[in-house]
Length: 150
Image (tube, rainbow, N blue to C red):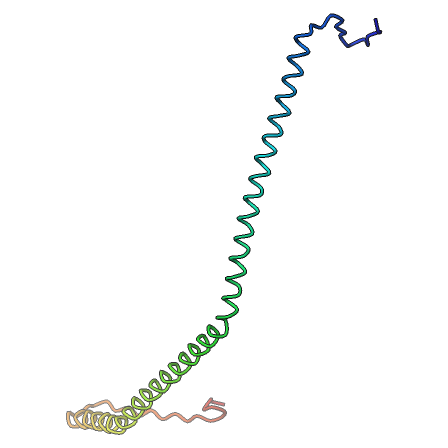
């Protein structure tokens, strides 16, 4: 009998059926592992086939984009030109409106100044006719830079 280590168990009379059960279970385990490996290999082949199809589609899309890119750039260029033209026209219309308003204000300014002068004169005349007793005249002289007193 061989010497056993301090913490190990040595069985001398192991039954033959147990050995057969262990051997069969190891064979079943090996077959199951092989079946799983085969399934994984088949799935990987299918996945690689799909990836090749996707890659081919991507290459087709790339070629299509490369073929249509000059047309798309031309369309974008045309859109930019249209936007620039529209902006230019809008600016022109705004300038015309501004010029019209400026002309109207300029033409109304002279009559407005005259009418304010007339109204002020009439009010002063009415005040004088009513005989306003208090008359105050304030005259202030300004000298220096921008009219500041020295």
